[in-house]
Every structure is written in structure tokens, then in C-alpha cells.
Image (cartoon, rainbow, N blue to C red; front, top):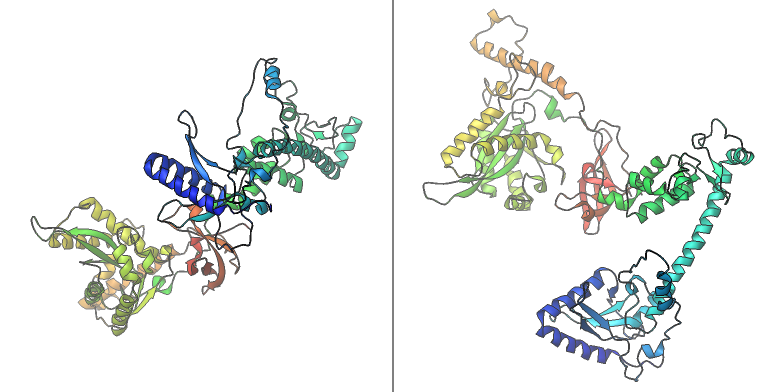
Length: 629
């Protein structure tokens, strides 16, 4: 190693020469860059960051393209020149030994193949690059490279055996031979372990079979007619003796249920089969082994495999909480309301005029499910406050107004990017909150990424869009037509029955008629005979009847938990989770760790704070997947 001189200067000059050649041939450059990108992507080379000068002895290998137009696989290969002399006149190859020729002579292989009817020929793809070099020696395979001349030249280390170094053929062949030896030693070790485990778990069965007797009646092997092989392994006798299958397939080795050895073998097959499911795993395992209760073990291995879980994560489902007081207590319509947006819809001011976007604000009463729709001409705070004032003037003041967090608004990630920006703007929130406070209203935001917290107004949005899309689609209409259509849609939504009563269904519209927006609460008139009531009291009596029916018919329907009825799951600080992202595939969902839990009034955790690589997030439990670790 002391004979090697400085190699970086010659490698840098050769790199500039290669870049000039690539600049003259765009096709060659594309293939060269693609080759290097593959090298980096497969982990066959690694960029060195924050290198301390003089800390490691490096040998830089120049590289250049070799073109083979007749090649059916790779027409352009990058050759790394380990024979390039350093400043001392000594190259890397000069310091290396080529190794012995340990593979069989080619002539003898061909002559032997002639003695058989069939000859199989195989190739190991990227054979040299399948074998990694120990990290301590990788600096001797350093290269200089950049993917574009606008970048700085970087230092990379080649991590695998490189075509061009003297001992490459020996190292590759020797590694293959070592694999074959290791495989044989592993098979012998496996037989020893199986024999010991069987002696531990099936002592009575082994004694009975050795004597030529049947296994005990309660033995799990009573169905398989077991026998002891020449290797002293308990095997399945079965009924396939006369088949043409391999001996291990006809008589697989018996593995005990839920033993550590059984789990290890099944886990090895699971990974070897590229994370196969339980059925494929068991089909492959039973070609050689017969694990008792193996299907349950296979399912458990797949369930606990982190890679399999990440490819198809299961979202946490927490026990459904109690309905809020605003949903189950008698109150004036729209006293407690939710608000959401949808759109855009398109308004055309006049004939041959350019259409422009508008949006619809959806207000819904949490108690009666009554709906109010307001057309909003643009996504400014002033327009939203105007829509809120129109709503209050026609429906009365709200005590509490609920809305999703800005990231939850319907369509905000797609068509409503402007809406998303407006709703997340702190100034917008402060202005709206101030207007609400001045009017005696309180504004509440749901947790981030938790649209199911506002399921009532989400359903109203879907229903309103359903009617609008079927009438006008995305065609532009005049302002008057759109207002008329929205009020008709509002009437349809408020005519939906709340209870399954075919004769006289209870609807939201029943509660919107017969009361002033500034009405004073009336005394209970239900027990007073009708002939003693005046006209106004008859109207109030009818309205009170609606509320009585609301309590008896509608409220009872809210009793059952139609989903998330299972007992509450335990959410603990420190658990590692995957965070669902509707805009990314599952394998790209971020990891996080629970650092704080936020129990509800019933003590059940439905919102958690997570620590991620990009900071802390607050998310509902339904948006996380707890890793099985």
C-alpha cells in the first residue's frame, strides 16, 4: 500500500476527458449517466459526504465508456481502470494478486455435458456486483463523478467487486464456492436442530414409532402415520408414497406447532419468497416440512412483519365516542352549527362573458340536520364573513360554530388550494374569530387531518354536490340561476326524513317553520287541551310536538354504535406508528412516535401528538397505523 502514489490528479484529468467525449454524443451521455444512476440506486456505490482530508488512504480509479452495439443487455458499460498508474508509477492492480484458478477447466465441463441428454446453462446477472467488499477496503475503489457539469465533482466509493481489478474473477468464483459449502453445512446443522427439537417435543411418539407401534391417540401426529427416517428424523408417512414427487415432498419432516425453530424456518421462507402471504408460504414450506398448526404461525409472521405492514397498513380504529351535547339536546335550529365549503362552481355574468369561479358555504344544524347554503364569490376573508352575516341574519345567531381544520376542507388538496391557503392563514382566523366573538358566537376547529370529526357537515356537502352535479355538472350559469338552484337544493336537503315514518316523516323543515329568529321560549303546551289554545299557541303546540317526536323517534336512533364498536384500544406514549397521508402510497407514509396522548371526557384517547423527522404533529387515532413492534 505504501507503493501507491497520488491518483486523484490523473483521475480528475481522465474525468474531464470523458465529459468532453460525452458532450459530443448525447446518446452516449444518456447511457453513461443511466449506468451510474443504476450503480448508485442499487447501492453498488456510495457518495462520500463530509470527508476529512487525509483521514483515509484512497486510490482513485479513472473510468470511461465501452460501447458494444451487438450486446442484447447493456450496450454501454462503464469500465473502471484499476491498471492506471499513480504518481509513483504503481497502479492498484500492481499491488494485488490475481488468485488461483479454482473453477473447473472449460473443456472438461463441455465434454461432461456431452454425456447427458439435457444441458442447463445459467448466468448470474451482474455477478461481480452481487458481492460486497468489506467497508475498510472500499476507499481503494474511489472514483470522481458528477451527473451534470453544473454540479461539483463528488467522491464516490464502489461498494462491490469491480470489473477491472485483477482478483475479480477469483473473488467471485471463490464466493460462489463458499456459498455452496455454507449451504451444505447449514443443511447438516438444520437436521441436528430438527432432531433435537423432535426429541424434546415428541418423546412418546418417537418411542412408539421406534417400537413399530401407533402413536398415542391424543397425539397431533395420529393423522399422518409418522415414521423415522435414516437420519433419525420423524417424518410424515402420509399417502403419497407412490407419487413421482421428491422424497421430501412425499415425506416432509414434522415440525412442532409454535416452536421457535418452526417460526424461524417459516420466517426464512417468508423473506426468501419476497414477503409472500400465508398461503404461498405454506405451499412452499410443505414441499420439505410439515409444521403442525403452520397456517396460524404463517399468519402471525405476516402480521408481525414490519415491511408487510408498511405495504398494507391497518389504520387504528378507536371506540366510537359519545355524541356531543349539541347533537342530543333540544335547541333552536342552527344554534349549534357546522360549516364547510365545496366547489368551485362557475358563474357567467352574462352572454358571451368570461365565467369565473365561486364557492358554496354549507351550514348545518347539529341538532336537526337542517342545511343552509350560501354562494360565496371568492375566497377572501371578507366574502366569508359576509356569507356568515347573511346566514346569521336569516337563521339566527349561533352559540357555537364548528369547522374542520384548514387541511380537512372538502377538495382543499385538489381544486381548493386557494381555500386551503385562506383557511390556514392566521390573519383570516383572527378576523373571523373576532366577528364571531362580537356576535356572541364561539368558533371551534377540529383536530388536523380528522374529517370524520365533522362527519355531519361532510355528509351535507356530499348530498349538496350530488344534486348540483346532476343538474348543471360544471357548466357555468348566471348568478340568479345559481342562487335559485342552491335554494332549491337546500329545500330538498331539508325535506329528507329524519325518522322511518312513512305516514308523516319528521324532517328538518318541520323545525324551520313557525318560529321567529328572535323568539322567546314558550311554555310547554303539550298537556293543555286543544280547545283551550289560541291560534298562536296551536302553532307553538305543533312545533313542540315536533320536538317531542324528535326526542322519541330520532334521538333513539342515535343510540347504537354502527361502527367502531369494539372495546377501546390502548394508545401509549412511545409507540412507533405510520402516519396516513391521502396523497401518498402507503410505502411512502412517514414514521412517527407518540409523545403525548389527549384523552376525551370518557378517558379514551382519540387524538395524539406525534414526533416526526419534520417536527411534531397532532393527529386523530384513525389516521395512524401502530407498527407491530
